[in-house]
Image (tube, rainbow, N blue to C red; front, side, top):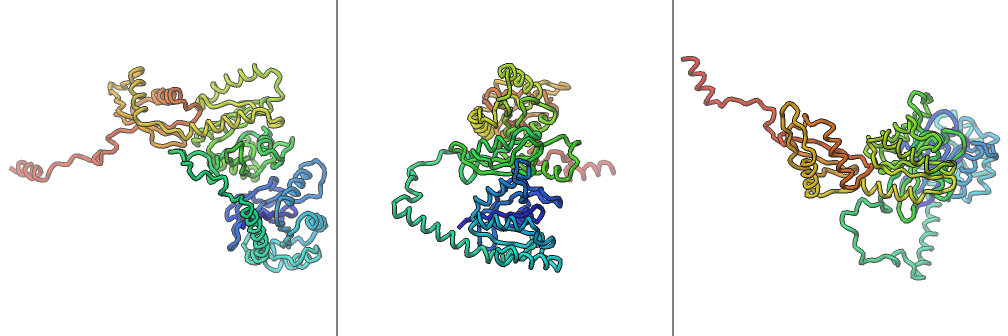
Length: 494
């Protein structure tokens, strides 16, 4: 049985450290300064025999207005309402504060299951705070040390009966459905056969991985909230709100998708703060795990130097790229602006020639259907495979149209071609003297592949190989047979 556990508490009490401990990975950013976590981060937790979903939340603040702290508190309260169990964490070394009393009253009213935990309780320094925790009226506090893994067994013992309760509820619900003839297998077509070679298509087991990247304040979190249809991520006019790379599962019009919201990426020279460096590296890691990268631009200032670097990074990582221009609702001359954008795109990013350029408005939701279609098309092209026969017929035509040069009088023969892999498409051409083939001819072949096989925008890898590379005797010195050596030796002595 799986239930949802939300970790809540004041800033800097160790919630993210405990989250990382429960999921067994360093997913959440951790730093000594308070207020590092701002968005809700979900993960699959394992604790003994228990399996459940854990939510890391922003630190509870006493602010209730529309400030950044107030919006963070509203998001945390929303997580409390979503979760089945709340783990209220206090700092045992600091002791119980007036804010802890306020939040204890809130949790008592909003959550049916509240577990009190005193973190940083290792050694004698946390004993006083552990005893103070009784005055919150939430029962006996658990003594934890998220940093050192102490108290995890006690936490599992407390969660065990709660997990059993939710399992019994699930069994009762399944029994009711079965009695009404509404089992999960009711709508399954047993005669349906899966399509051949379609394993790359998104499924519940392997959703389409999409990362949204861009400069700060381009509207990445707002766009993802609009796609989700709910205020799941923290947004606002302040630049750099998002710090963690947050992943979210959703069914986007029938397509299973995992969306990654990333921190805004500034120029490296401007990134001095340690926390911002961690945020940017977290976003770069999301790009490496993604299949499609959406580079989000601000319509008012598109294609700045940093935008070009981000798009080039996605291409070098071999990811399918979709360029989306946000805040399109604020533009007056849309036709003229779109014409200028397309011209600048082709001029500044020739390595992504043909990649889809989509205009959207995260605030109003306009253009999201075009964005989804572009993402799915880019993903399909990224997984495309071309038969060897088609490739060699195409290669013959390209050679007839423009034969390879003969540098230094060496004639370069391109014998045959095959596709080595997909994701991104990679091709191998067997030829003579591959080291002498100029880069311009390789670009000629890559551009031909893009145009003739409808692979616009996706990164294409082209490798030139010589058949001699497979010769095990290549590079060895020719040795004289032993009999001949003896004969030559006799001759020399005579």
